[in-house]
Image 1: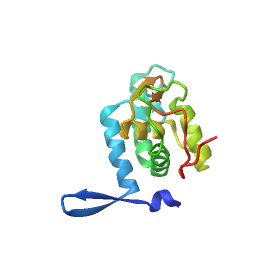
Image 2: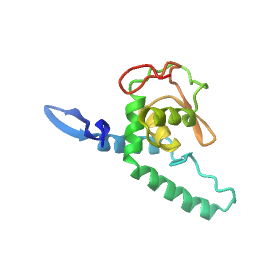
Image 3: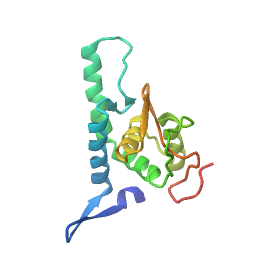
Length: 152
């Protein structure tokens, strides 16, 4: 399944060491992101069904959040791509989360959702600004692949 799923993190807990899988780490980051942005879902921020029906929109939103929680490979791909990126002080309006998710897809050669990118950016404590279903984050203009090489 690739190095993303094989990777483990060592966390220090006093004098004890505990193995935390990439999946567990992503779940912790996702929980943090949900607490910071309750409208977070698979599509990004919020769900618009176009009907204005609140009951349907509420049901669709819950389904969308559940779907995001189940997409571990997408979450791991986004987290691995975001971690080495340099951060700016200010929000960068050059790259929306939707644009960044396409860069991750190209780099990883697999689909990732806008919500997965948003969740990991928020969970990793990037500064962010909501713009519809997308967010802008304080990411540098110089983007890097997983291995540290510049992204074209």
